Length: 267
Picture 1: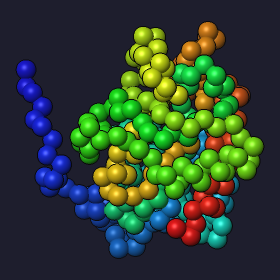
Picture 2: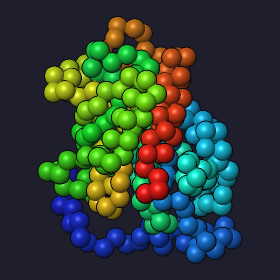
Picture 3: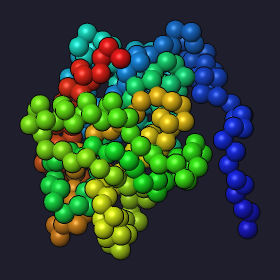
Picture 4: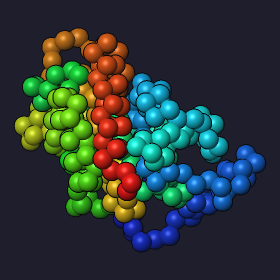
């Protein structure tokens, strides 16, 4: 068996996000120096959030280096904000965020969904992670295991205040991020539930870890699309739950994110 060598976080990578962005831009006939994005980015972590974010900010598509992941720029409180679909999963989300950091972004607010594991969290409630348990592989390429993946206090406070202002029920605390939603076993859920974890998603811990590594501000709001402790029959993993309540919860998360953004601009 071939073992994995210990990560050396100061080693230079073979390529960099900026070089990668420049290379892709040139292939698309774009001028790399013109690829400047807004400092504040709303990361859509649920496909249902993307169109709503675009609508709420009156965003329009701008030139960017992903054909399948267009970049939109809208306005909130008179300031430009970027919007891009960055899911599902930690590797994709961090790659997109890396490219955006390389182009000037330094404030990220993720808008997505999760499966709640705290029984009192209802489908439709919002969860605001303060820290994320790193049960995915991506974050370990950025931070050693001893470092916690914590969210930006500034953005977290703005999200919670926005929930209060809009009368939205939110729960603040730890979440679990996984790479394998089809391996959410009952013993594992019970283990984390007993330790106060609120729910499980697929991106948060990696995004928070990257934020610490790159020294940018990152936080998320996650709509409870399901409760994994419920006896109700599941139609699939939390990120594809299709109930009307779950879809409405994602739209509520969008409204909260936009309201929170008004509290952090100008940043």
